[in-house]
Image (cartoon, one colour):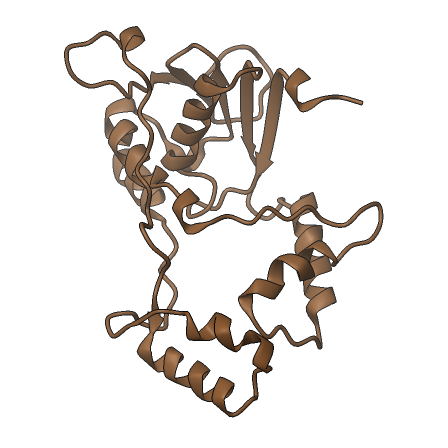
Length: 237
């Protein structure tokens, strides 16, 4: 059986959604991870064509959706157990729970270190990106061609100031959340009412009562990050 420590080369496949995968934050994150990795030597990421991106992760989403249909999930703490039990064969899903302090601001680091207008990178057109341990360069292709030639190579230099690159450690992105996120006061009021009226079972009340709320928090989702697409388009015009 292959041990994770024996892995030397990694190929990643993902869709071309700018707000999730195909952006500067992803390229910088992979590059910085590779420089710190103890065993991995190269990483290639392949961005699939929009409309042709059915991958194993899509089947996972479908399994979860079918499993939770007509089921009541009373509290956020139930989700990790439910998702893990959605599948039995060949084994239950492995769920890794992240804490708020584990989320880092890769977007900010990507914006700082990879300016599209300076590198000439057409982010929206990238199909493959290549990373090698020990190299500051990122190589990209705008096609799925397997030839050794690249369409563009550029450097990521995390080091500012007078010291040489090899003498200075790679920087780490800052944490995004210093504390747990607050919910809106309106949502908090509704949850308190559901608990007090025992609509939500008593065993979950403490979890909801501990939630913090702020008047400035709005009940809406943030817009998808499509800035890389916009900057790409402006650089082409």
